Image (cartoon, rainbow, N blue to C red; front, side):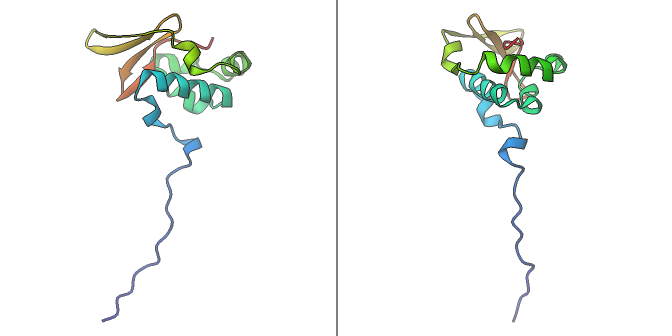
Length: 117
């Protein structure tokens, strides 16, 4: 018996460039590195998603444009002098000393302050 099947189409997921890489937001250290990378590349659309919802409107094209040159030569490790983990008000927090605080939210580490301004 002959079975006919439709030809397979190569269905791909959106390019990595157009989708947030949630895997890179699973640790505080990697989250800051990913945000720094997005900032350098000027990826406002993806960078905005790395912040808690109340801060997302403040991640503007102007803020990103001003900050891109300031952080051009920085490495994620430059921000990592110390990381303090805690549980506060029922949420896990990771405080990057002198830089920012991340909060475990939406199954990923989201930044609670606009560290690049």
